[in-house]
Amino acid sequence: MLIIADDWGYSDPGSYGSEIATPHLDALARNGTRFANFHVSASCSPSRAMLLTGINAHKAGLGNMPETIPPEHRGQPGYNAVLAPGVTTLALRLKAAGYATLFAGKWHLGHDPADLPTARGWDRALALSQSGADNWENKPNRLLYERADWTRDGKTARLPRSFYSSTLIVDEAIVQIDSVRGRPFFATLGFLSNHIPLQASEADIARYRARYDDGWTALRAARAAGVASKGLLPDGPRVTMDSTRDWQSLSGDERARWARAMEVYGGMATAMDREVGRLIAHLKASGQYDNTLFVFVSDNGAEATNPEANRFTTFNAHMQYDMAPERQGQPGSLTYIGASWASAAASPLRGYKFSAWEGGVRVPFIVTLPPALRQARGAVAPAPTHAVDLVPTLLDLAGISARDGLEGRSLLPALTDPTASIHPDDEATGYELSGNAVLYQGRWKLVKNLPPYGDGRWHLFDIMADPGETRDLAAAEPARHAAMQDAWQRWARANRVLPMPAGYSAPAQIQANATRDLLPGRVAPLLATLGLLLLGLWTGRRWRVPDR
Image 1 (cartoon, rainbow, N blue to C red):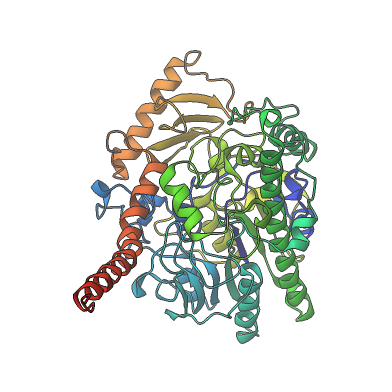
Image 2 (cartoon, rainbow, N blue to C red; image 1 turned 60 degrees about the vertical axis):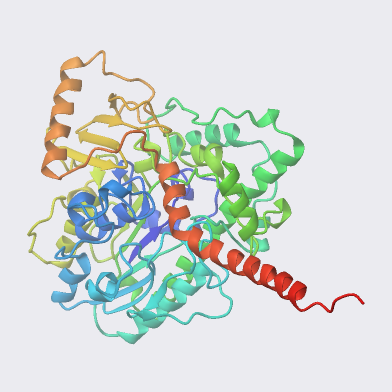
């Protein structure tokens, strides 16, 4: 059972130090292993590509996402913005070994028939091809798309008139699992929680009433203490706050609005956890729980995007959604937490989604084996690990020896001995998305972030001693700094990484791509209405009875 959460920060689960109620995920953590140093991509689909194929995102065809890719890169090798033809998925490997392969939720790896889950190894699939959608109705994220692209088994899906996304996904998973009773199964659940638009029931939101009234700086400090208390990172790590906004300088109305947004965020996460619990209860009732392996992971750090950052996006948001502060989280609303809360959700790490700082790429990752398999339960594994390690791990546990083309290493040693190392200290693991780049080598991290996430220069950190990336060691370690830059260049050439166009900015590209895709559809009805109005006025003048 692979559970992929959307845009959860490093310290969002309760078992990673959060105040958010996630009792069912916490139970999986108590019975399993939490990884303290697990890395994915800084955005949705490249992470999913790596988790589901065991190769880096560029080789898998996701050198960039449809939403952030510049026009100059479209169609270039590795930049299909969909899962590339010929790439072998985990589902295909398990299917060949006799597993039933099931999918429910967010896919975001292609929308054409040849790119959907049922064409890539899954027997059954309810899949959303886009980055997100409405959680209450069959409606898209109207800031990016004209319609919600849900399919069931490769054909347009008919969804209920009203639903809640996490419930819908678990309902589908239960039906799929029951349909293959008696066979081993591999089920992938891609929740929309907590992607924009953030939405939750009033009951779930109310659980967090007044919880965030002290603001994001206080929450970031509390989360850092929580992470340390769980034994995930060194005690007392230095904390970097990525937003300079002063909570106390906000007006009372502004503080109430932002506190409500984070209440919605907490409620949405708790609702997802409850649905995970419902699925676990079903597996227990059907006698399958004790023979099921669980993996929980977030696809990247928390989302910092502000849809009201400029006049155009603000106009679009207010045209498409009810933006009243008191309506946040309800049907028809658009709620987001922005950079300051996203920074707190990543605490004590630096950065958030889209950035290559640890807060963008280091995420909660829990593996819980069936009771019959030996595991150090409730343990924390500190060794650096990566998204491409998941496929070889699951193949090991399934007893499948084929490893052709895989880049990762099995995490099985860390599941039995949490102190075990997975990657040799001299092994280099590269990463790039939208010009933000990383090279990991043992405890060392070389990182570069383009504006607005950084200064475009290479920095060097010891992320085992300094996970918050507060002390740049480039000047103190010039030889290592230079050698790792050379290693990254070799990795980039081998994986056909393209340089970003001059002045590229991921947030600006999202807006440009959305405008290109949406403007014709949004403007055409307005022009048609205006044309009819003018025609009516002209016709009225033409046929008006003359005064006598």
